[in-house]
Length: 129
Image (spheres, rainbow, N blue to C red):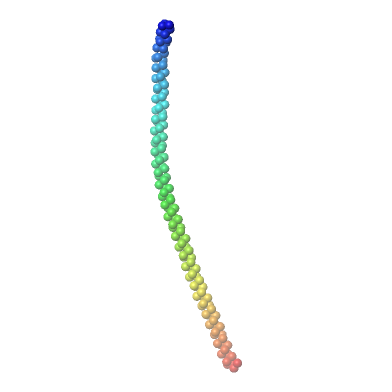
């Protein structure tokens, strides 16, 4: 029994250098894998930093565009208001001008009619009618 235990211990001792080699090899693989993860993490952090910077730039551009859009809306509303005001003023002046011209025309027609009436009246008076 002792002899079997001794053989088992000796067999186990012979396996130890092989197990150590396998463990070292596995450690080296894990170290390389860890280095790859570190490099990948570094790249991702750099990319993340650049993306955050780009997002900040785009956000600022968005805010600027929003301010410009608001300013354009205000300007558009003011332009519409001025257009309505100008249209109203032009229409009112046009109406006044038409009224003045109509009044002149009617005055001219009235004067012509009155002159004709006077001349007809004078003619009738001469005739004695």
